[in-house]
Image (cartoon, rainbow, N blue to C red; front, top):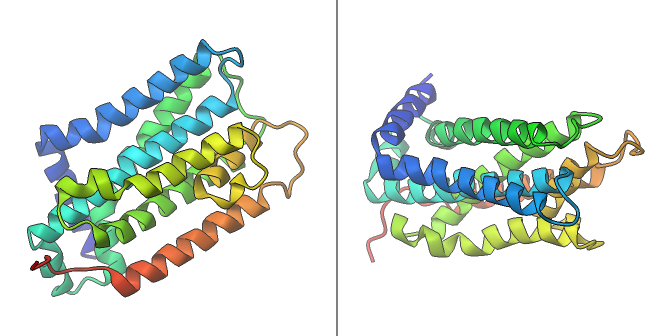
Length: 237
């Protein structure tokens, strides 16, 4: 298989770039720790809501913004064009390019959740909603990154083109915390509701189905858009 080789090459490039590594590690972890400290000093204290927002921050910064920046850069360097001309399928090329960021985001999420639990949050009563939120969130952030890269002509512009989706992701989580009844319709809201569900002792086994449906439909829609509009060649104008 070719895509694992591509993933190893991308990982090597990430490790060799201090700036890229700092953006992929320091900013997300710093944001997650900052949110934990704010939650600890708030009247509510540390709870499942703090972990939900940490998950959203890591998904947004490490995977979504990082992937959009990387894809725009690889397109500009004509790497995507060469991949298109290889034996790799579109999905294989995306998988190879995104896998290092996926692994990094997953490791960061596990570490951040572990640190927050060690800081005083009780372990979840059931783990499957938390695992589902992280797993589906990773796929969703990656799919959104591929779509957003279509309108990102250069990596320097990723900080602008990622704002709408990042706000929808993070804003959906905040909307849930504020008690928004329809917040689950936003991907960030669905992620937050699933994370919270892991700590709800009175939840029923089928609670969370609508969040899984929303995220699955969003992933499917993003996949269709990516397959139709993704650009492999650099912009000429």
